[in-house]
Length: 235
Ligand SMILES: C[S@@+](CC[C@H](N)C(=O)[O-])C[C@H]1O[C@@H](n2cnc3c(N)ncnc32)[C@H](O)[C@@H]1O
Image (cartoon, rainbow, N blue to C red; front, side, top):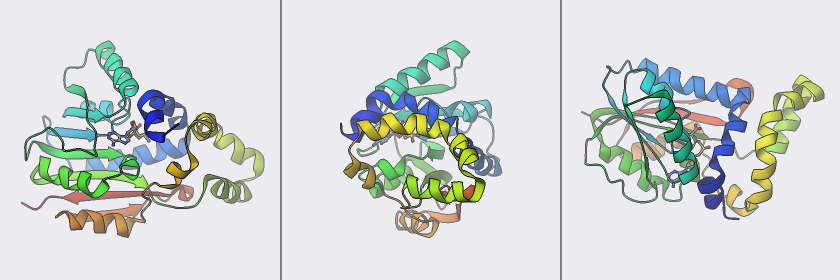
């Protein structure tokens, strides 16, 4: 099965991976960087590759109006179900493929967020240029990707050596619950084909699109291999 098909039809399984504290830690580090921008309530946000709304709902709770796009029907349906259940008005979930031009006018958003999506996007530099286009001058982008080429098994070995085998396996149980069907169902070649940039390289791609690089960092928790960046479109 092509990985794209997996994300489109079975992306909601990602909720299992998110139970793992590594993924939650990246999520918290990401929202901390968003909060540092201190954007006013009512700011317009594009959450690109929103999944079922992992970041979308916390952004809405901060008073922002969020347009949340993904190319996965299943995750969009989950997000929309939750939005309706919670009676939220300031989120729109809609289809959007980051490999193609976005339908939004120039300078439509104050902030673009994207948590762990860009490494999967084939035309990643095109997507970054689209983020630049739809942001207003002075607008920001906060984004994370996988940064390391280390395979999961190598990383797990290193982690278990540091923390003990039992504790290590217990810590990654949710990641493994998600990872087994993912690995069985998708093609190894495509999984290996992801863009994985260290923070400096992430910065170079955004600078090439015209952004000012405010910050790039490796999220430091047990080195899970995550690069986070905060970028600004010049005024
Ligand atoms: C690792 S999940 C992250 C989802 C969400 N941001 C979160 O933190 O839970 C990656 C998401 O990127 C989406 N995605 C991958 N390639 C995409 C593309 N070309 N256009 C839009 N969404 C894409 C997938 O459908 C999936 O929901």
